Amino acid sequence: MAGIHTLLRLLPAPLRSVLIKHREMLKFAVVGGTCFVITTVVNYALKLTVLRNNPVTALILAVLVATVVSYVLSREWSFRTRGGRERQHEAALFFLISGISVGLNSVPLAISHYLLDLRTPDVGVVTQEIADFVSSMILGTLVAMVFRWWAFKKWVFPQADARPRVVRTAVVEPDEPGEQAA
Image (cartoon, rainbow, N blue to C red; front, side, top):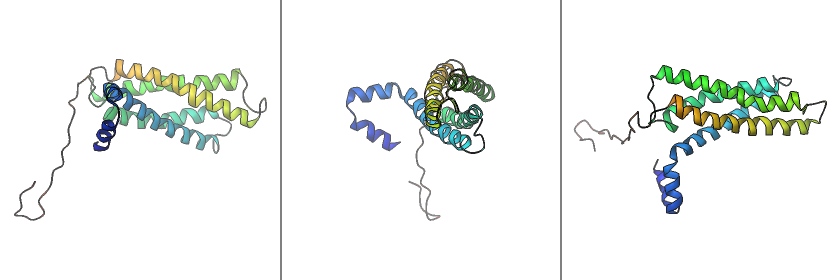
């Protein structure tokens, strides 16, 4: 974390204070960005191979993979000091909300594909891929992200400062049996 503190010191004081004040949201955004990359890679890996004719299924599977990663990162980093629920209850709510988010994420793609017919043979492959990316990876992700932020803070991790912030210090073990640890 020393790198983050060094970076923060380089920023102007007003910006630094805003970033520190909204650090939970920034962490949520970093987790979201990481999961966005995971979703994109898995989605296109499936869509361009085994699920060529099922883009909605490919997207749903990609979002599910990213959701598992998101839970671990959200609990252990983004919302690590929030809580207020037993872990099983918290996980169940997280995955329920994430399941709703999968549906919300898929709606723009389904509209693009099946309502607006932005798919081959009605449009060219390039047009279809651009429409798919904008509708699923941009619009769908934004809709799901806003819903997740609100729902996670309201139901999954409702209580601020429920878990103490752990400050980890390095422990130095003695090299020789008679030496004292630092």
